[in-house]
Picture 1 (tube, rainbow, N blue to C red):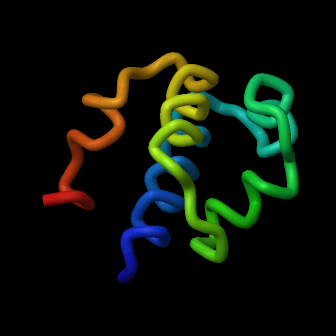
Picture 2: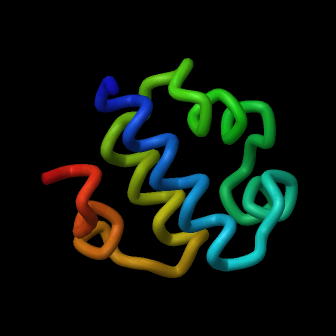
Length: 71
């Protein structure tokens, strides 16, 4: 699994835990089609954009990366 796929999987996981649709997350973050591409691992994210998604999900970067996917 590539790093992009891991990031996408983590965003999808956290979005579902928060009971948000891609559309609801995009209202906070900005771009629905981009969220879909990220979650499928077809788009790379900069650390700034990961930070923005974390802010929209109301979690820290530390919490985002603190999971078994990134170990």
